[in-house]
Amino acid sequence: MNSKEFTQRMTNTTSFKKEMVENCTRQLVDIITAHLCDGDSLSIQGFGTFEVRKKNERVSVHPKTQQRMLIPPKLTLNFKHSNTMKDKLMKKEA
Amino acid sequence: MIMNNKLNLSDLFQELAEKSGLNKTSAELFAKTFFAQIEEGLLQDGIVKINGWGTFKVLWNEARKSVNINTGEEIIIPGHSRITFTPEQDIKDRINEPFSYLQPTPLDAQSSLVDEVNEDSRDEHESDSTSVGDTLQKISDDADEIKSLLCDINGDNWMNTGKDDKEETASDAEEKAKEDEIDIDSKEVEVKVEVEEKEEETTVENKDEDTTLVTPEEETTTLSEELAPESSPAEETPQLTTDNSCDQPRHKGWKIVIGVAASLLLVLAGAYFYATYRVEQWAKKTIALAQDTVATQQDTVEEPDTTVCADTVQVNTLTPPTSYTHFVDTVQLTEGSRLAWLAKKYYGSAFFWVYIYEANIDNIPDPNEIPVGTIIKIPALPQELINPLDTNCIKLAKQIQEKHIQ
Image (tube, rainbow over all chains, first blue to last red; front, side, top):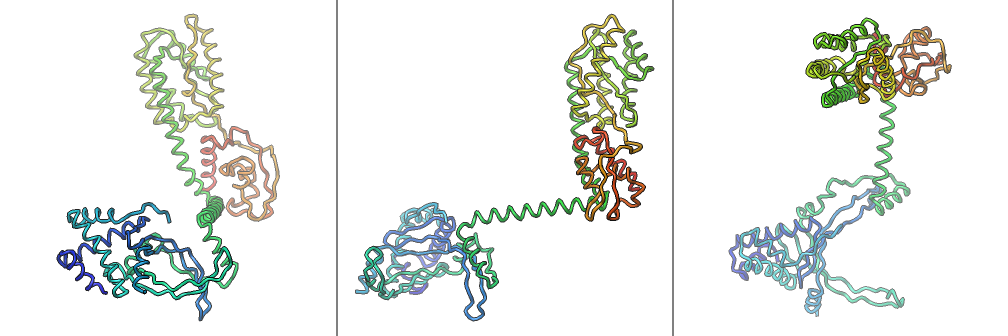
């Protein structure tokens, strides 16, 4: 499902206008990202948890040139699905 | 990463309602549908892409063998699906903003470096702070060395570096003087006796005492105040301004005198006014003596005022030595050694190198370039001349220095 389809579905289920949905999506994403930047974590019940984790710096070696590079530490956004979500996925597999 | 808050969906739609202007129920509806739709899409297609945010994907983890960590038994973890979320580059950059300035750097192929790096990552803050401290220390050390080199090479630099200090002390002295004047004013000292070592002036003063005239006294005070700063350092005569209590009618005149004296003091005698503690005490003694003598001269004098302000005493005791006869040490100049360093070593301040130079002036054609191996005699100097805390000493040294540089 791409973004277009997603917006279409949202308009159908919420009966909002398309522009409204796009606008709200943008704002929601903005709010979530802002909170994550502040170091907050966001857990959506029945869906999963978003949180920011720090990846430590590490040394990587270029396989061809054998050049060692120090990769600096970075912050990444992590998503972990919830258990209910896992069960649903399992059910689908079955 | 410090976790500040755990947010949930209700926090989210409340904020959304505030931001988008939707009412709360529609915001709640929207937020709930938002995640429900993602979930539905994932279950249906296995992938949901949202522009401006990222992509959710369902991935299949194959079954794999593992070991039960408690029993050591081999177990098989069954295959399962998991959901991944890949944010768009924008969002990634925003999240990583605190570390965005860091760039991957190539390393030398040395295993020791790798170890160091690993250690760094373990206790990042500690190692950072210590290394920064070390480098800072090193930099300041270097700076000191360079400074001393520069100063030595070019005597003018001493002037530049010393200027600020000088100004500060001058302003300090001014303030001090002001306070002193106010002090006297508030105490409303009634009579003033001027005692000077010059006999002429003392007789004039005595006359004033007898006639109780205001104007002549004013004149003499202004005179003496003008005299004070202009007197050369060679003149070792301190000029004393002491107070004795006597009769009332002089009160107003005294205030005028104070006003005139204050302005003159501030303008002319600012720098000279800086009296060291030692000098103060010495001056107090002299005042006491002077008061005694005055008391014996005049029968009408009452008890001497014990709250005499010693700060209003002006002393010019510094005289540059004209000849150097006594020496404390003899040094052979080694490579990298300098007069300023010797001065710092023997006298406590590099400013006093001029005295060493003067003592050895016959052997030193150019103080900036003294050949290695030159025998330098370190002259013995009176302690009050080389007091590194006394601005007068440093000032005098600078004057001499200027003379030599010209």
